[in-house]
Image (cartoon, rainbow, N blue to C red; front, side):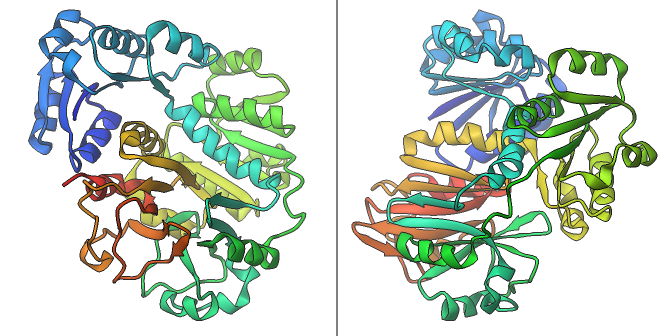
Length: 448
């Protein structure tokens, strides 16, 4: 399968690196020769040093023979134009990254007019995950995700005391037909292994047969706890802060948005209704305290600087705010984040790459997918006869640490797999993967 990526930035690199694990021939087009040379030394891809807005460049690359084109340059209009040109020249599917809020109200028109199959927006994607965490958990009736006869539930470990301080292999003695698929610990989602122990502050994601999960839900569901998301403070009035403030104000929350750029404050004040815009540096603790930071139900740091976001998130936690969420783009902060105890940390690059791969992987019979706290993905696939993982015991698949085969739906039977279990043709397989392991997941799903 042939994939063209226009734009050799972080997102283009991330998607290319992930797809190389599967059955894809990758061509990357970019105007920057230095970036392309560096990239070609790291990845086995074909590079073209040219401006893809020039139709002759797309024709020269024989774009009409490609299955996918992904336009992810740093300019929205260029991405829209390149994707439209590629579609017109015969590329089967085209995807464009579009970030400007002015385009968001007319995405349907842009897609239809330009023939674009999918539009991705990193800022909106991360906003949706934050919104789901903050707003939907306050209104969700039971918190169960179901697929056929299999269900997944999230709950705090302390709601089921018999699980506390147990090592993962001991869990089957308490929940015999279920599996702890993931643990959210101090804002970081992990896939548990044999030496992991359940701690009192953990949130657990448990998968099993639907009826048993429903019964478990009656024991662990926190009735009436999430009913009053009223006050939210957002630091950073960029695209993420803009989208989130708008969505939360429409939800009914009182939102305070702190932004240090005066011109940006003017823009925000004219484009947002019922949101208090504060012109100040988010690191000014005295201002945050004057604005009743301690009374906030939630605190979101979404500036353009990871260090600032983490510092402010830690400060908010020390002020006793229940829900603290931080936007962090660098992988190197992972271990630090876990020690800080922030409730949720999101990487826009991970989420956007996952959205793109889900679209591209659709041909692999992915039935559904669901993001867990914006850090992991649970997906259901239909096993077909060409998959390399078919007929091989799971213990021999050499599954990476970030990927877990959580459950198998075979006919009317629900299987919680062990090392001896082998996937059979036409099984519906539930797979959980950290977004940071999407390249490893691609290798698992590839054909023979």
